[in-house]
Image 1 (spheres, rainbow, N blue to C red):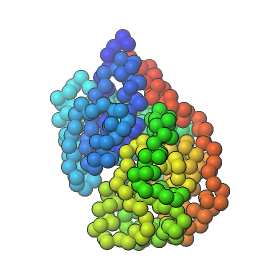
Image 2 (cartoon, rainbow, N blue to C red):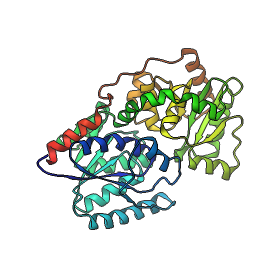
Image 3 (cartoon, rainbow, N blue to C red):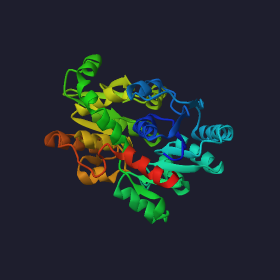
Length: 363
């Protein structure tokens, strides 16, 4: 490159790590000087520290050590920490954020207030539900970003409809799939180990629940009751997010015969998903990963910001009512698995396309 450009990438939660891992490699291969800033928004060992080893992601250059606290308190703390960081590091010209978590919003606000250029990976996704903090974060970050990297045509349309300058919008594909495809062989070969470790003896489902709107006694009782309907014939494995474990413990919820396990490292978790009969989740990224892996997905929400997965038939949004869960699982078990979905630009080359856009705009 004729000019060396300093890029700071911000991560704070497990999905962020998965998305930046391939991008760091591409940026450094092209001569960019890259710093990795970890906010510490996720404090759980399995959700944070272990993911670096699992993805072969180098250690962060800076750790903000965000305390465990409310969303507003974390946001305020991180904005202040980023402000101090940018003051001490004036050479960091370009700031990259991913996804829709509190760390993403905090870094974006502080970057723009410090006069830095900002790019947002996974821009344009919309659930149309402003009660979700993730939805509010996405909208705010997209509107102050200098470059919006969209994963699909649906995301591009959302950005255009919100009057974001078309010159800022770049359709590059799904960066999370870069990591999945890069680790596909490891994912396929890891199942026997995880099967043995968890003592899986039957066909099984994988379940994840972590969103604030689902951490509710009545909702979780509906979900757990619906799932336990199948527990005689299937193992039902729930790798429990720390937030979910705490809620279950604090509210003495009966999980029946569900197998609650600690959060699993990335490769082993996706190996479990790959070999499951069905995945039930309120996660956005898992809707995409199951689509590529060929595993039926049932989304435990009332809407999704990944409608392409619904259009493909790889995912169905079913809500959280017991009757809907039971009916939907029965239908999936009748139909069985499908072929892995082939989605335009979900090809493992998104990081390369992002780097090319950055070179065109800043070098």
